[in-house]
Image 1: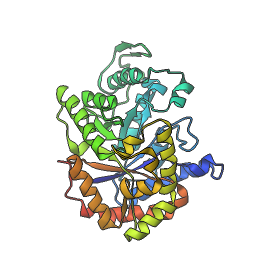
Image 2 (image 1 turned 90 degrees about the vertical axis):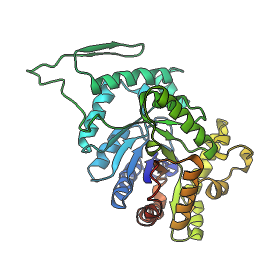
Image 3 (image 1 turned 180 degrees about the vertical axis):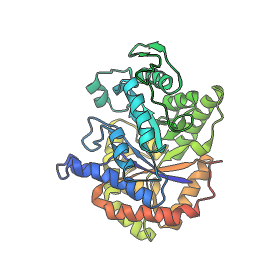
Image 4 (image 1 turned 120 degrees about the horizontal axis):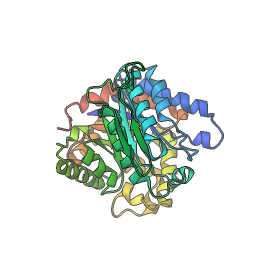
Length: 359
Protein backbone atom coordinates (compact mmCIF):
# COMPACT_ATOMS: atom_id res chain seq x y z
CA UNK A 1 0.00 0.00 0.00
CA UNK A 2 1.29 3.42 -0.98
CA UNK A 3 0.28 6.79 0.47
CA UNK A 4 -0.03 10.11 -1.35
CA UNK A 5 -0.75 13.67 -0.20
CA UNK A 6 -3.01 15.86 -2.35
CA UNK A 7 -2.38 19.58 -1.97
CA UNK A 8 -5.63 21.00 -3.42
CA UNK A 9 -4.97 23.38 -1.57
CA UNK A 10 -7.84 23.88 0.85
CA UNK A 11 -7.34 27.48 1.93
CA UNK A 12 -10.45 28.76 3.70
CA UNK A 13 -8.31 31.25 5.62
CA UNK A 14 -6.98 32.72 2.38
CA UNK A 15 -10.52 33.00 0.99
CA UNK A 16 -11.52 34.85 4.16
CA UNK A 17 -8.60 37.28 3.86
CA UNK A 18 -6.79 35.79 6.88
CA UNK A 19 -3.85 34.26 5.02
CA UNK A 20 -1.57 35.38 2.21
CA UNK A 21 -1.21 33.47 -1.03
CA UNK A 22 2.52 33.19 -0.30
CA UNK A 23 1.66 31.32 2.90
CA UNK A 24 -0.58 28.96 0.93
CA UNK A 25 2.21 28.31 -1.57
CA UNK A 26 4.82 27.73 1.15
CA UNK A 27 2.48 25.28 2.89
CA UNK A 28 2.15 23.31 -0.31
CA UNK A 29 5.91 22.93 -0.58
CA UNK A 30 6.13 22.04 3.13
CA UNK A 31 3.65 19.19 2.68
CA UNK A 32 5.95 17.71 0.06
CA UNK A 33 9.00 18.05 2.31
CA UNK A 34 7.27 16.24 5.19
CA UNK A 35 5.90 13.55 2.87
CA UNK A 36 9.45 12.97 1.65
CA UNK A 37 10.83 12.92 5.19
CA UNK A 38 8.25 10.52 6.62
CA UNK A 39 8.36 7.94 3.85
CA UNK A 40 5.13 8.70 2.00
CA UNK A 41 5.18 7.93 -1.69
CA UNK A 42 3.61 10.73 -3.75
CA UNK A 43 2.50 14.37 -3.56
CA UNK A 44 0.01 15.88 -5.99
CA UNK A 45 -1.01 19.47 -6.72
CA UNK A 46 -4.36 20.55 -8.16
CA UNK A 47 -5.18 23.15 -10.81
CA UNK A 48 -8.00 25.68 -10.32
CA UNK A 49 -8.46 29.27 -11.44
CA UNK A 50 -11.68 30.74 -10.04
CA UNK A 51 -11.90 29.11 -6.58
CA UNK A 52 -10.74 31.39 -3.78
CA UNK A 53 -10.69 28.53 -1.27
CA UNK A 54 -8.64 26.32 -3.63
CA UNK A 55 -6.07 28.70 -5.14
CA UNK A 56 -3.70 26.72 -7.37
CA UNK A 57 -3.48 27.88 -10.99
CA UNK A 58 -0.03 26.39 -11.63
CA UNK A 59 0.63 22.84 -10.41
CA UNK A 60 3.69 22.71 -12.66
CA UNK A 61 5.27 25.54 -10.66
CA UNK A 62 4.43 23.80 -7.38
CA UNK A 63 6.01 20.57 -8.62
CA UNK A 64 9.10 22.48 -9.72
CA UNK A 65 9.41 24.20 -6.34
CA UNK A 66 8.86 21.00 -4.37
CA UNK A 67 11.40 19.13 -6.49
CA UNK A 68 14.16 21.37 -5.16
CA UNK A 69 13.46 20.46 -1.52
CA UNK A 70 12.74 16.74 -1.87
CA UNK A 71 14.79 13.78 -3.02
CA UNK A 72 12.63 10.65 -3.02
CA UNK A 73 8.89 11.34 -3.11
CA UNK A 74 7.19 11.34 -6.52
CA UNK A 75 5.54 14.62 -7.57
CA UNK A 76 2.58 15.11 -9.87
CA UNK A 77 -0.48 17.09 -10.89
CA UNK A 78 -4.09 16.12 -10.21
CA UNK A 79 -4.40 17.30 -12.68
CA UNK A 80 -3.26 19.53 -15.48
CA UNK A 81 -6.52 20.86 -16.98
CA UNK A 82 -5.81 20.26 -20.64
CA UNK A 83 -8.50 22.49 -22.21
CA UNK A 84 -6.80 25.50 -20.62
CA UNK A 85 -3.36 24.95 -22.15
CA UNK A 86 -1.92 24.69 -25.61
CA UNK A 87 -0.91 21.01 -25.65
CA UNK A 88 2.47 21.68 -27.29
CA UNK A 89 3.44 24.10 -24.51
CA UNK A 90 2.15 21.82 -21.75
CA UNK A 91 3.87 18.76 -23.22
CA UNK A 92 7.21 20.57 -23.13
CA UNK A 93 6.66 21.68 -19.52
CA UNK A 94 5.84 18.06 -18.65
CA UNK A 95 9.08 16.87 -20.23
CA UNK A 96 11.00 19.60 -18.44
CA UNK A 97 9.47 18.55 -15.11
CA UNK A 98 10.41 14.95 -15.80
CA UNK A 99 14.05 16.03 -15.95
CA UNK A 100 13.81 18.59 -13.12
CA UNK A 101 12.45 15.95 -10.72
CA UNK A 102 14.99 13.35 -11.77
CA UNK A 103 12.26 11.10 -13.14
CA UNK A 104 9.86 11.54 -10.21
CA UNK A 105 7.20 13.40 -12.18
CA UNK A 106 3.65 11.99 -12.63
CA UNK A 107 1.45 13.48 -15.35
CA UNK A 108 -2.09 13.69 -14.03
CA UNK A 109 -4.56 15.19 -16.50
CA UNK A 110 -8.23 16.17 -16.37
CA UNK A 111 -10.83 18.07 -18.41
CA UNK A 112 -11.73 20.53 -15.63
CA UNK A 113 -14.80 20.18 -13.43
CA UNK A 114 -15.76 23.72 -12.40
CA UNK A 115 -18.10 25.71 -14.67
CA UNK A 116 -16.55 28.98 -13.52
CA UNK A 117 -13.13 27.90 -14.83
CA UNK A 118 -14.69 26.89 -18.14
CA UNK A 119 -16.43 30.26 -18.31
CA UNK A 120 -13.13 32.05 -17.70
CA UNK A 121 -11.50 30.25 -20.63
CA UNK A 122 -14.71 30.34 -22.71
CA UNK A 123 -14.53 26.62 -23.52
CA UNK A 124 -18.27 26.08 -23.25
CA UNK A 125 -19.18 22.39 -23.08
CA UNK A 126 -16.19 21.35 -25.17
CA UNK A 127 -13.82 20.33 -22.37
CA UNK A 128 -14.11 16.52 -22.82
CA UNK A 129 -13.50 16.80 -26.56
CA UNK A 130 -10.61 19.21 -25.98
CA UNK A 131 -9.08 16.81 -23.46
CA UNK A 132 -8.99 14.00 -26.02
CA UNK A 133 -7.53 16.19 -28.76
CA UNK A 134 -4.87 17.63 -26.44
CA UNK A 135 -3.84 14.13 -25.34
CA UNK A 136 -3.33 13.06 -28.95
CA UNK A 137 -0.97 15.99 -29.49
CA UNK A 138 0.88 15.44 -26.20
CA UNK A 139 1.32 11.77 -27.07
CA UNK A 140 2.83 12.77 -30.42
CA UNK A 141 5.28 15.14 -28.72
CA UNK A 142 6.34 12.40 -26.32
CA UNK A 143 6.61 9.48 -28.72
CA UNK A 144 6.83 10.55 -32.38
CA UNK A 145 9.87 11.84 -34.23
CA UNK A 146 9.41 14.80 -36.52
CA UNK A 147 8.42 15.96 -38.91
CA UNK A 148 4.71 15.51 -38.25
CA UNK A 149 1.63 17.69 -38.37
CA UNK A 150 -1.69 17.41 -36.57
CA UNK A 151 -4.64 19.56 -37.59
CA UNK A 152 -7.31 19.45 -34.91
CA UNK A 153 -10.58 21.15 -34.16
CA UNK A 154 -9.08 23.22 -31.34
CA UNK A 155 -5.31 23.19 -31.95
CA UNK A 156 -2.85 22.62 -34.75
CA UNK A 157 0.67 21.30 -34.21
CA UNK A 158 3.50 21.21 -36.75
CA UNK A 159 6.62 19.47 -35.45
CA UNK A 160 9.69 20.29 -37.54
CA UNK A 161 12.33 17.75 -38.47
CA UNK A 162 15.50 17.60 -36.41
CA UNK A 163 17.91 20.36 -37.39
CA UNK A 164 21.58 19.62 -36.71
CA UNK A 165 22.46 23.31 -36.49
CA UNK A 166 19.71 23.98 -33.93
CA UNK A 167 20.27 20.59 -32.23
CA UNK A 168 16.54 20.27 -31.97
CA UNK A 169 13.70 19.73 -31.45
CA UNK A 170 15.35 17.87 -28.59
CA UNK A 171 13.21 17.26 -25.49
CA UNK A 172 12.60 13.62 -24.57
CA UNK A 173 11.42 12.10 -21.29
CA UNK A 174 14.01 10.91 -18.80
CA UNK A 175 11.73 8.09 -17.58
CA UNK A 176 11.75 5.03 -19.79
CA UNK A 177 8.60 5.26 -21.87
CA UNK A 178 7.75 8.63 -20.37
CA UNK A 179 6.08 9.57 -17.07
CA UNK A 180 3.05 7.74 -15.75
CA UNK A 181 -0.19 9.39 -16.87
CA UNK A 182 -3.23 9.53 -14.56
CA UNK A 183 -6.85 10.49 -15.12
CA UNK A 184 -9.42 11.16 -12.40
CA UNK A 185 -13.08 10.19 -12.31
CA UNK A 186 -16.00 10.82 -9.98
CA UNK A 187 -19.27 9.74 -11.60
CA UNK A 188 -20.09 6.01 -11.19
CA UNK A 189 -19.62 5.38 -14.93
CA UNK A 190 -17.03 8.09 -15.38
CA UNK A 191 -16.23 9.00 -19.00
CA UNK A 192 -12.73 10.12 -17.96
CA UNK A 193 -12.02 6.72 -16.42
CA UNK A 194 -13.22 5.17 -19.66
CA UNK A 195 -10.79 7.42 -21.52
CA UNK A 196 -8.03 6.48 -19.07
CA UNK A 197 -8.60 2.80 -19.75
CA UNK A 198 -8.73 3.33 -23.50
CA UNK A 199 -5.34 5.06 -23.41
CA UNK A 200 -3.67 2.78 -20.88
CA UNK A 201 -3.41 5.50 -18.23
CA UNK A 202 -3.68 4.83 -14.50
CA UNK A 203 -7.06 5.56 -12.86
CA UNK A 204 -7.69 7.87 -9.91
CA UNK A 205 -11.04 7.72 -8.12
CA UNK A 206 -12.24 10.91 -6.47
CA UNK A 207 -13.62 10.74 -2.93
CA UNK A 208 -16.87 8.78 -3.36
CA UNK A 209 -18.73 6.03 -1.52
CA UNK A 210 -17.19 2.56 -1.72
CA UNK A 211 -20.12 1.22 -3.77
CA UNK A 212 -19.28 3.72 -6.51
CA UNK A 213 -15.59 2.87 -6.29
CA UNK A 214 -16.40 -0.66 -7.39
CA UNK A 215 -18.19 0.82 -10.40
CA UNK A 216 -15.16 2.99 -11.12
CA UNK A 217 -12.91 -0.04 -11.37
CA UNK A 218 -15.35 -1.93 -13.55
CA UNK A 219 -15.68 1.05 -15.91
CA UNK A 220 -11.93 1.53 -16.17
CA UNK A 221 -10.98 -2.15 -16.43
CA UNK A 222 -13.55 -2.83 -19.15
CA UNK A 223 -12.25 0.04 -21.28
CA UNK A 224 -8.61 -0.95 -20.71
CA UNK A 225 -9.20 -4.59 -21.59
CA UNK A 226 -11.18 -3.67 -24.71
CA UNK A 227 -8.26 -1.47 -25.83
CA UNK A 228 -5.77 -4.30 -25.36
CA UNK A 229 -4.26 -3.22 -22.03
CA UNK A 230 -4.00 -5.32 -18.89
CA UNK A 231 -5.49 -3.30 -16.01
CA UNK A 232 -3.64 -3.53 -12.70
CA UNK A 233 -5.23 -2.66 -9.38
CA UNK A 234 -1.75 -1.77 -8.13
CA UNK A 235 -1.98 1.32 -10.36
CA UNK A 236 -5.42 2.32 -9.02
CA UNK A 237 -5.35 5.34 -6.73
CA UNK A 238 -8.29 6.08 -4.45
CA UNK A 239 -8.87 9.50 -2.89
CA UNK A 240 -10.08 9.30 0.71
CA UNK A 241 -9.00 11.61 3.54
CA UNK A 242 -7.14 9.94 6.37
CA UNK A 243 -5.92 11.38 9.66
CA UNK A 244 -3.82 9.65 12.32
CA UNK A 245 -3.14 10.56 15.95
CA UNK A 246 -1.83 8.54 18.86
CA UNK A 247 -5.31 7.51 20.04
CA UNK A 248 -8.76 7.23 18.47
CA UNK A 249 -10.15 9.89 20.79
CA UNK A 250 -7.41 12.38 20.01
CA UNK A 251 -7.71 11.74 16.29
CA UNK A 252 -11.46 12.37 16.23
CA UNK A 253 -11.20 15.51 18.35
CA UNK A 254 -8.37 16.98 16.26
CA UNK A 255 -10.08 16.06 13.01
CA UNK A 256 -13.36 17.71 13.96
CA UNK A 257 -11.89 20.81 15.55
CA UNK A 258 -9.23 21.30 12.90
CA UNK A 259 -9.13 21.77 9.16
CA UNK A 260 -10.58 18.35 8.31
CA UNK A 261 -13.86 19.26 9.98
CA UNK A 262 -13.90 22.76 8.48
CA UNK A 263 -13.17 21.50 4.98
CA UNK A 264 -15.78 18.78 5.46
CA UNK A 265 -18.41 21.43 6.11
CA UNK A 266 -17.24 23.41 3.08
CA UNK A 267 -17.28 20.38 0.78
CA UNK A 268 -20.72 19.28 1.99
CA UNK A 269 -22.20 22.61 0.93
CA UNK A 270 -20.42 22.45 -2.43
CA UNK A 271 -21.71 18.92 -3.04
CA UNK A 272 -25.23 19.93 -1.99
CA UNK A 273 -25.19 22.89 -4.36
CA UNK A 274 -24.44 20.67 -7.35
CA UNK A 275 -26.58 17.75 -6.23
CA UNK A 276 -23.96 15.03 -5.74
CA UNK A 277 -24.04 14.38 -1.99
CA UNK A 278 -25.12 10.81 -2.73
CA UNK A 279 -21.71 10.19 -4.31
CA UNK A 280 -20.18 10.76 -0.88
CA UNK A 281 -22.83 9.20 1.33
CA UNK A 282 -24.09 6.36 -0.81
CA UNK A 283 -27.70 5.23 -1.18
CA UNK A 284 -30.11 5.76 1.70
CA UNK A 285 -28.40 8.74 3.34
CA UNK A 286 -30.19 12.05 2.91
CA UNK A 287 -28.24 15.27 2.22
CA UNK A 288 -29.25 16.72 5.61
CA UNK A 289 -27.78 13.68 7.37
CA UNK A 290 -24.32 14.39 5.97
CA UNK A 291 -22.48 16.55 8.49
CA UNK A 292 -18.79 17.02 9.35
CA UNK A 293 -19.33 14.56 12.22
CA UNK A 294 -20.85 12.03 9.83
CA UNK A 295 -17.92 12.41 7.45
CA UNK A 296 -15.35 11.91 10.23
CA UNK A 297 -17.13 8.83 11.58
CA UNK A 298 -18.36 7.21 8.35
CA UNK A 299 -16.29 8.37 5.42
CA UNK A 300 -12.85 9.70 6.33
CA UNK A 301 -10.31 7.25 7.74
CA UNK A 302 -9.58 8.66 11.20
CA UNK A 303 -8.06 7.11 14.30
CA UNK A 304 -4.98 5.64 15.91
CA UNK A 305 -2.44 3.86 13.66
CA UNK A 306 -4.10 0.53 14.38
CA UNK A 307 -7.60 1.85 13.66
CA UNK A 308 -6.53 3.59 10.47
CA UNK A 309 -4.77 0.45 9.25
CA UNK A 310 -7.91 -1.60 9.97
CA UNK A 311 -10.15 0.85 8.09
CA UNK A 312 -7.78 0.91 5.11
CA UNK A 313 -7.82 -2.88 5.04
CA UNK A 314 -11.64 -2.90 5.17
CA UNK A 315 -11.87 -0.46 2.24
CA UNK A 316 -9.27 -2.44 0.30
CA UNK A 317 -11.15 -5.69 0.73
CA UNK A 318 -14.55 -4.12 -0.02
CA UNK A 319 -13.48 -2.73 -3.42
CA UNK A 320 -11.26 -5.68 -4.34
CA UNK A 321 -7.88 -4.03 -3.91
CA UNK A 322 -6.08 -0.82 -4.92
CA UNK A 323 -2.54 0.48 -4.88
CA UNK A 324 -2.44 3.99 -3.41
CA UNK A 325 -4.50 5.95 -0.89
CA UNK A 326 -4.56 9.70 -1.58
CA UNK A 327 -5.50 12.12 1.20
CA UNK A 328 -5.75 15.91 1.09
CA UNK A 329 -3.24 17.98 3.03
CA UNK A 330 -5.84 20.50 4.26
CA UNK A 331 -4.97 23.79 5.95
CA UNK A 332 -1.73 25.28 7.21
CA UNK A 333 -3.55 26.29 10.42
CA UNK A 334 -3.52 22.61 11.47
CA UNK A 335 0.06 22.02 10.36
CA UNK A 336 1.33 20.44 13.60
CA UNK A 337 -1.48 17.88 13.63
CA UNK A 338 -0.98 17.01 9.96
CA UNK A 339 2.77 16.68 10.41
CA UNK A 340 2.20 14.18 13.22
CA UNK A 341 -0.39 12.35 11.14
CA UNK A 342 2.03 11.88 8.24
CA UNK A 343 4.80 10.85 10.62
CA UNK A 344 2.56 8.17 12.14
CA UNK A 345 1.43 7.10 8.68
CA UNK A 346 4.98 6.43 7.58
CA UNK A 347 6.25 4.88 10.80
CA UNK A 348 3.18 3.01 12.11
CA UNK A 349 0.39 2.64 9.54
CA UNK A 350 2.40 1.78 6.45
CA UNK A 351 4.06 -1.31 8.04
CA UNK A 352 0.64 -2.57 9.14
CA UNK A 353 -0.71 -2.57 5.57
CA UNK A 354 2.49 -3.42 3.73
CA UNK A 355 0.98 -6.70 2.54
CA UNK A 356 -1.75 -4.86 0.58
CA UNK A 357 -0.14 -4.61 -2.85
CA UNK A 358 -3.14 -4.24 -5.11
CA UNK A 359 -2.19 -7.42 -6.91
